[in-house]
Image (cartoon, rainbow, N blue to C red):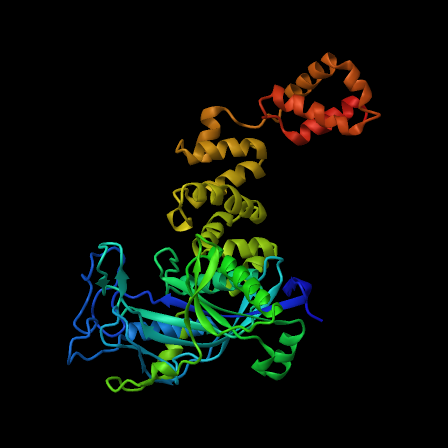
Length: 497
């Protein structure tokens, strides 16, 4: 029986969405895949172009070994098969930003084969997405249409930049799963240092293949491997934000369902998502890929990798997100949810560990994932740009643990620390924010409040929940600095609870 969360209700009954994604990740490298030209964002038009990138006659490509290493590193991080022998092919098509008239890619023998990625769903459960392949290819240039009303300009800075195309199996069943999968791939790539994951600059983008089928057909496909049980897919090209991925899938699935329920058929085609209109639009029909006339690139020998080199790369891998999640749960006693939030950014997890040494790990986690994260988000920064030393969070938690300040006062202390007034200990001393633990002073405040409110005091025995009003009054009278536990104990004794 199909999980109801995987179904979309149409006029004539329920439908299932089936998706596979092709993620294009720009390789983190200082030079291009087949030339020594620089790679970087923000250069002037055509300032980072070699004769190879520009397609000058007689220019031969030279493979960048570091880009190959980055692809192998990524394959290992995806638990995928590294193919010791791979081959580059020419994908032939004409476009003004492709000077050679072909793109060097890998079709028949990719550098990375099958793998699997474990993805966390929103509800805390996990699902697996199969990786079909990862291949290396060069990017095309860019056309600029808004500099002239009659002409288009070509910028070849991006031409020849190394890309990794990560192709998934059709294992993704909802817009939420698609977003979770892309987030997980992005996190892995950033941990590995093989792509910076910057979607705004186009360094990570996704082609989303969407199809729909009747309830139960996906289970038949999984049981038999027969794709005829699935619907005709449409490919939505170059989606570069999590929000747009979700919106594009929702729209495209509904569009296909409406066509099928009206008796029509889905044409296999390539589409674009227009975020302004909130719809997908047809770019071109795509019956088959035969028009690309793939053949082995005669200028490049097959790529053969030594196992010892692959083993050296594997030995140099950092701790990856799944392993870090399991370790944080085991070493610090964190819940799965807390660990997943922390590992979403490598810098966030590292920051937590630096602050949690010898402290209450759950309390540290709360401060890191709530207060610190919120301040960074408000300032448009991530954890790699965090101005607050981890030692300050550790000290703040220590002040709470040792009852120097209350949790409520801690928020005030944090505000002052964030604004640059010094360490938590310095702020507490400077502003006189130490918690009042002197029971005599607390008792005096309580006596005054009870004396001023005899009717309320008399009614507490009948309505014990009204004790909270007295607690609030005591905290107000002491400027929020009274120890809450002491306040509760003394009030209960005074009011006969």
